[in-house]
Image (spheres, helix red, strand yellow):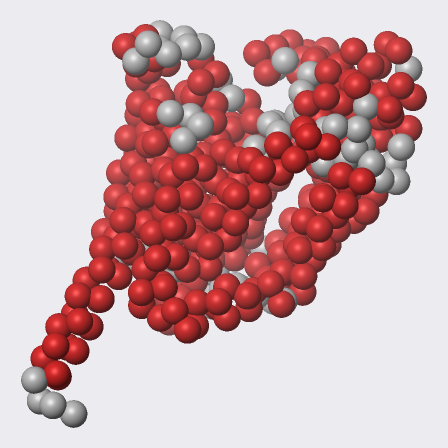
Length: 422
């Protein structure tokens, strides 16, 4: 080999490494500023996550393209990956009987690209997030929470200045995003011995969530913090069992949620939750539950919630129960799966959740407690809020999972196992 070719090769490798590092830094920056981006534009998270995923994909291609595809396919060969693929496969299968295939395709077209982006990010980013990014994320979370609090206290002065819709609920999505990402980011910072910044992230998120008008965000905060604390105190099996019981009940009781709440929820509770429209939510849950009871086996088809009142199954529901089938979605993602994908969708979804808990059970502390806190937070929100296929929700949850996985590589080396009897 000519000697003058050695410096040229070294120079090429240096340039390649610089390109890779810049792409990783760009992707990590986008991941870190997601909470702040959501405050400034509450539909921005899919675009932010998509760009972050592209940056990491490009960086990994430059760094080691030979191992890229195997590393992306490996998680899909696990029991959890296969169950998730089976669930996703059932969604387009339901196109065979959906009365609105165009609408179903549009919903899938919003959901699937974001799902792919978060999968790429969760696979490629952990272990390749520069040291500055968790600190930037803490600052973004703290600033996002502060902006939410100040804007609401000033009668939405920021929204007025930006010429946007002036309504307090514009901060609900940012608050829900803070709910999801704050705990995982704090765990990464705690691992890095930046515990003051970890506390800042948690306090900033709590400020934004508690100041917002989103009852779902506040419920998620309470559920996540509660299960995190219990998982730190309880033996491994008890914490996982508690989470499994909660998820199992969320799926099993979703079709009868409305009837149960109508019977047991006191009027005083409705009065205290008037801002959360609890009466309307109970009535909506009863209507969609009646639709599930009318056709529990296959559902109305993926993505039909927005036009559920026009589906054939709606005609089988009592007339007084049909009106609220037109609200857009059942305000319960577990019930939405039942209504759209039927019993097969519910069973496959439950299998995914239980296999996910199996993975969480193998984590050391405090990773396991933080993961269970995230599960409880997300499940509590999903039980009372939003369209389950919404891209902004998928993006926020994917960002949280990415941060959770980012803490894992150093977990075994830096934290001894401190747990009760297994």
